[in-house]
Image (cartoon, rainbow, N blue to C red):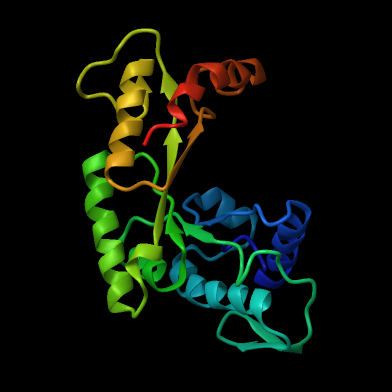
Length: 218
């Protein structure tokens, strides 16, 4: 979020939602890389406070006309902004969040959680906490979904018990997928970008056939 202006981003995302006929899911986070923060002139120390304005403004841009918003970071004079997204009230927002303040923000503003690189037991505990926070914020906790970002590292041979989640043999990764389904993950997507061959398009395409058998795990 610190890299974007929410008015411009809302327009871009609306275009994607319209062109895809309402298939857009929006994944957002605070960012963590100082080099990227410096390159985009973002203030790393104010990420959380900025997000507290960014998310409600994004929703307002998608759902109201005229839109008006006045905050510390963003000011939008009374403005009529069209088009609006196909999805109502707006495309679902999934946040990457790990620390308590970010989890509380997720529970208040977002439609779901997008965890990555966390053990299944940790995800289960954190997801329970998120839904409890949502309930305390006056929301229906069952509407908060979990979409797992699976950083894939597929190996020819099984790895030992200290392996990271979604690393190892096809069977081991399949066990991780089943474990995520068991704790209530709504969806899971594989990301091989950081695997040893992750920059090869041929490698990505070869994974499709190998992984498609896991897509119907329930």
